[in-house]
Amino acid sequence: MAQKPVSSTVIRRLPKYYRHLTSLREIGISNISSKDLAKRMNITASQVKQDFSTFGCYGLQGYGYDVDFLHDRIGEILGLDTTRHMIIIGAGSLGHALARHTEFEKRGFKVIGIFDTRSELIGEEIGNLKIRHFDTITEFLAQNKVDIAALAVPENHAKRVVEYITGLGIKAIWNFVPMKLITDNDVTVENIHLIDSLLVLGCQIQDKTKKI
Image (cartoon, rainbow, N blue to C red; front, side):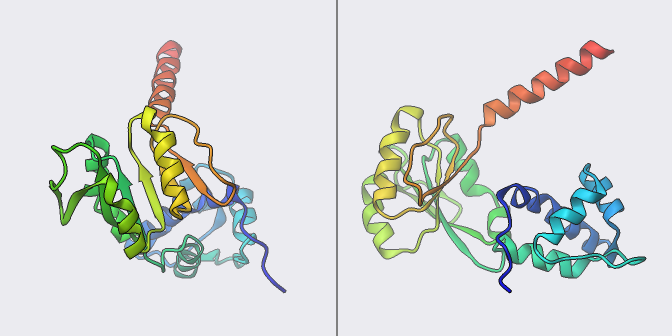
């Protein structure tokens, strides 16, 4: 019988599971109980069991879960056994930081191009990449398989850029622009709101300060 697709809610927890399981492997732990893993994850043991059961992984009484097997299975679901090619649109401070991030390739995401429209940036090297003019992106996409576009452009340019690149066949966007993107249903968008996250952190600090 075909296995049901893993829900988006569970998928959002999988990277955190994967990080903890990677750490466990590195220190030589071969099995772990749902209770101990839940404590590391700051969730309940029943949530761990429910999450893992959705993709056919069950612990054994008195043994728990096999760390290697679970690590590899989650890696498979996350697609870490496949290299994904990514481009970055916007070569400002954030674009530079993304292009220099060494962990992407370790996780199977290879940055193969970075684009901007500012003439003073074109040709600048970031690692082993040269910043290309956005006008060349049509030709680039025709010659290269690109899975993901990371968007780090000014907000007033985002809508036009998204319409253009999705028209060229881009199906996944990692959006760092603080606005909701309107795309076709077959385009996947992951929104990263850096300022929102920072504001939440500030609020949490304020709440703790009030309690002192």
